[in-house]
Image (cartoon, rainbow, N blue to C red):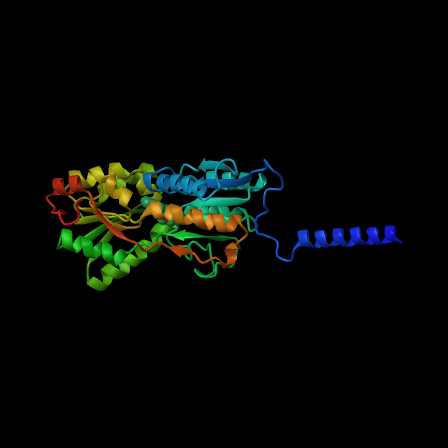
Length: 324
Ligand code: TRP
C-alpha cells in the first residue's frame, strides 16, 4: 500500500512539474536552455555614418549595462553598405541562423528585416516614420513582430531656426534619396510647410552617394539655402555636400546633429545617444518576454538646437546664441 501511494505521489508531482513548464503564456523569446547557451541578436545597420554608429555603440553598451553583456548574448553585427540587396541577404541569414531578435538600425534595414520574417521579434531603431515605412499598423499598437524607436523630425522648428539665423530665404533646395521613405515623408512635410508660407523649393534627388556632388552643384545659383532630411545616403556623403554649400556661401540646414558636426550649418534634432539607450531597454523587455505587437513605438522628442560655429563663421552668420 505504501508503495502504491509513493508511486501515485510521484506521478502527481511529475504532472504538476510538466504543467508548470508548459505554462499558459509562453515567452516571445525562449530563455537560454542551458548554462553557456547564449541569446543571439542580429544587428543590421543600413550604412556606416556617425549617427547610426552612435546608435549602435550606445545600444550595445546599454544592453550590457542592463545585464545582457557578451557572456549572455552573442551579437552578429552586419553593415549593408547602403545596398538593399545586402539588406535582404543579411536578414535572410539572420532568419536561417534562428537569431532570437533582429535589431534594425534605420528605415531601409527595418523594411528588409520585416520582409524577411514575421516571427522573429524585430526592434527597429531611429525609424523616422514607421507608419509610412509600413512597419507597424498603429504607433501605439504595432500589431506584428516589429516595434522600436522613432526619430520624428520637428520640421517647423528647423525652418523657424533658419528664419532666425538667415532671414529672407525665398527658395530652399532639397537634397535627398528618393528611395528612402524616411526622407520622402519629411520632405512632404517641408513642402506643405513652405507652401503654406508662400516660399519656394527645388529638388535634387539622388539614388546613391556617388550622385551627391552633381545633385548639390545642380542647385547652386537656383536656391538660397539647402535642406536635407535625415537621409542615410546624404549623411554618408555629408562632408562633400557641406563643402559645396560652404564654397558657394549657401546656408545648409539639416535634420541631424551629426550632419551639423560634418559641416552643415544648423538643425533642431534628436539626441541619438538617448535613442540608442531607449532601444536597448525595449530590447531587454522583448528578450524577457514582452510582445512587440503590443509595445508602443517610442518617439524621441527631446529636441536640441545644434549649430556649427565654423560653418557659421565662413558664411558670416551669427550663431553665438546657440554655440556652446
Ligand atoms: N531616421 C533615419 C531613418 O529612418 C536614420 C537616421 C538616424 C539618420 N539618424 C540619422 C539618417 C542621421 C541620417 C542622419 O532611416
